[in-house]
Image (cartoon, rainbow, N blue to C red; front, top):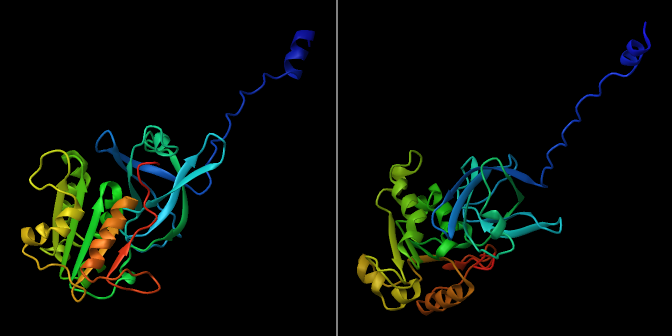
Length: 282
């Protein structure tokens, strides 16, 4: 054996280094779909933890790792119904928002953090039985109602469901419009929905078939006249509210003017307000 042969046998060529394993986020779920509706709005779907149980209308904390290496989390209403095998969320894009400046760039296959502890007040258990249920929302405040409009219990409990949704521009209504239009053909709840669901979208800036804020259309009585419904009353009407803090305060005052009382999980009444809604600062 030559010296060169001995060195070759004694010194095998080192194997290529193993690439580092992908760092999984804590409480990670995988993004399965992303849809950008406008330059300010997007929705996305993620895998659902097998152990997660929630009531349609509730929210969870979701997010990404921040630049400091710590989780950056915000409250997001689950837009999908409790029976869905995945979780859907509907979000605004804020260019300098701590979370959405990063979240808006997620792609299928990416991971997000999802803390599986759902809570919230926009649930059927927080309302007394009634005849009509009003969903009152601005912008991405539609999200919990996207869940509740796909929940069979909604149609079992009420004769009519009115979805009032206001945005600045027509394009910002598209997520809700497509969802509502799909419900009558939904194989699970289509027959239940029937003609029970009434959609009342409006804009505040761009001209549209209907315009005006939710607050103005309620207080002026325009929505009741347009839909041929009596003004709200505590014997028949129930309401859920989700929007900016100012919107919530204004709508609460209007509903109380109709005689409705604010309820909670522990004390059901005629209306509830989602206090954890995340607005334009995310």
